[in-house]
Length: 99
Image: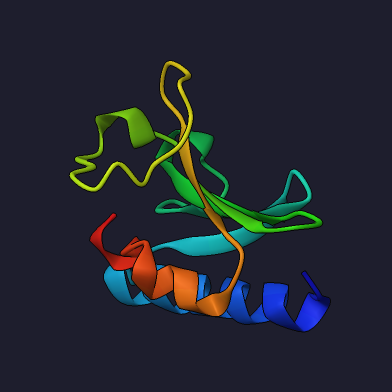
């Protein structure tokens, strides 16, 4: 994945999150960007995205509690789940807005 593709995916994710939750604030952390409803308060962290070599990972802090009718979320940890996005079209195909 080239940087233009990763940046396009990241921008789309940011727009969706900030439209869905206007009170969310974004900050760089852990090598990516995380979103919180109260700035600097990790207890209010909702999600984040991280750019990797072959995909952008959209990670949900409490993803295990989300309804996932299409079995799109990946991961088997106690709380977190993620979606791997390899192309900007994946944002729509994997129904990111629903989460």
